[in-house]
Amino acid sequence: MVTPCNLSTFLDKSGALLDVRSPAEFEQGHIPAAISVPLFSDAERAEVGTCYKQQGRDAAVELGLAIASPKLPGFITTAKQLAPDRVVRLHCWRGGMRSGAMAWLLETAGFQVAILAGGYKAFRRWALQAVELPRPIVIVGGMTGSGKTDILQALATLGEQVVDLEAIAHHRGSSFGALGLPPQPSNEQFENELAVQWAQCDPQRVVWLEAESKRVGRCRIPEALFQQMMQAPVLEVVRSRDERLALLVDIYGTATTEELILATERIRKRLGGLRTQQAVDLLGDRRLVDACDLMLHYYDKTYTYDLQQRNVTTTPVDITGLSAEASAKRLLQEVQAVCPPPLQPNFITASHSSLNV
Image (cartoon, rainbow, N blue to C red):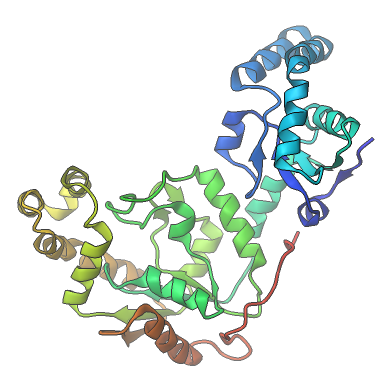
């Protein structure tokens, strides 16, 4: 009989992490690094659930066994492929019959199995609390096209703690932000990924974040974390307009004309009818620099307004002509003034393999 583990022990154990919930449950949200191995399809899960409500637990268990039994050899084959060492961790929604049944099967087949007590529900409860943990934050601000994301990546390479919200959300935060990126995760999955990264951050070291609105595309930054961000000091990188335009064209220049026009139309109300039509005409002629220059009028106003709402210390840092790495090093020099000891950046990446649960 497999003994369920608490969340901290479960996540610290080795072995492939198998999520035996239905595909729709997995898509809605899952533990990062989990692999979907559903015991039931979405339709089968619904059928068993209906049976439970109408005929009771015993009938639902019998139906579930009848549905799952023909699949058992396939589950073992899949598990062998995913875990050649035959060590697995698995969970369902609340650590009940689905994970218990799969654990029995795999243990019988010679696997070393760990089950998560409370299932995915326990992980979600932890994730919602984890994003409320206080951390010393420094915000990298700057107008659209300043290369903030590249600077964050350079800071990470230099050993700094960086949480890239846009990378987690698969979105750059503007109307054009989804172009060239994978589909966005559900908001629940965004929270899950963020929680794991946030909990792993050393609370005695600075965490670097990019200035964001409450939403990154359709993903919402948890309110507790957003309030921390709003109160954090801002290092505002400043580039020349020509450099910003060049960066924007480099990022979005591979998008089709139709994609660019559609993204432009989404901000018509804010950009204004005349300016929108001018931008659309320029995009139609693939005059991307001129189109971006026109739209920066809106984005610069929006950025300035958002920055004013923070009411915190803002330190301009001129990075005109600098590479992302050189810009990151410039920020590391400037941050000394806004981060009192011992909350100083350093060039050593701390190791935090286990979650603070």
